[in-house]
Image (tube, protein in one colour):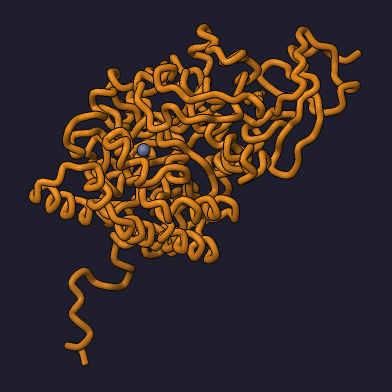
Length: 486
Ligand SMILES: [Zn+2]
């Protein structure tokens, strides 16, 4: 006799990167136990008919800022993760520019405590900076899944790591197989240009773009990928914004460097035309660029140069986003809740398939962070993380309805078609019928325990800092220069 399961979902269309199949899904506890023909489903405690809906593996957002600890006026773990649940996002990776920054074990413990109220599963990016180089292994032991290097400056004003520290960080992380997210902009270019613009009295929104030209991104990506190739370290380029730097991703990928890259809906769908109307609301790093960048970024997603969609969910209060001078408007805006309807709208327009979308939103991030198999797929043995999507449902995005504290968004008033209707996280609904399941707060947990990065491939280890400290045997400490001996 077949054991009774908790839930059978009947009559859905299950989406993977390769196919969309009509199937039913059986769930026991936190896991999917069967996917197949309706007749083959085991008996269940509860049944759910989902005719007309698509089942997508829950989205995995590699890039969110939940501001907690440090800035609870902007966001908390509870509000940020509620926004994720409402957006069909079941796992997030949270950034370290909180206060305190996640560069010590003590700071990590404070963050993990705050994350106990989470509606979604999560990974924590620890901070890779000059001050935290000697903390990387301890941070990994204490629960970070990955690291973030703010090579370009942004909110929090954490100093960019020196190139020496970045190289050394990669030397430590390459043999461990751990991936580092890089905010790739050249800080010294940004600082000088911003100073010139400020001295000239520019406070308009376009001055922000003028301060951060694409060359700052090209240069930083080139430098970071050079260090990654040399050391064998895994890296992830955050919020790729420029058409001009895509060639570097193609080049270094073709050379076998394990680099993954994300872009965000704002770089695909918005440009300076919107910035002229919305001003500081759209201030974000890297900046949203001219319209000529939009289509090449989309093409790069389609051909795999860019691997995934993330959001850079970076909330601030409406007051902090609408000051007179662009330099006083905080950088970033919320996004984790609006990503799925925005991207599904593009699918409905025929710009990509649902299978493409699942590859970008779930499969690629699951692979990049070592979660694939347990997450990123609707198959027996995987976590029951499912976004139930209604592709016919149309509506208008409204900043006032966001779960985020940051009720200000460049997407406000935008017409969309395609919404997540329910979100299931490890067998439990965190959003149902478009409504947050309030008592699911705290159901989210760290993915550290299921993370399994592929075998590390360090390179040039004989040149690592750790290998050059001691003189080779047989060479006296103060050996005379060879030329004198001749
Ligand atoms: Zn960010």
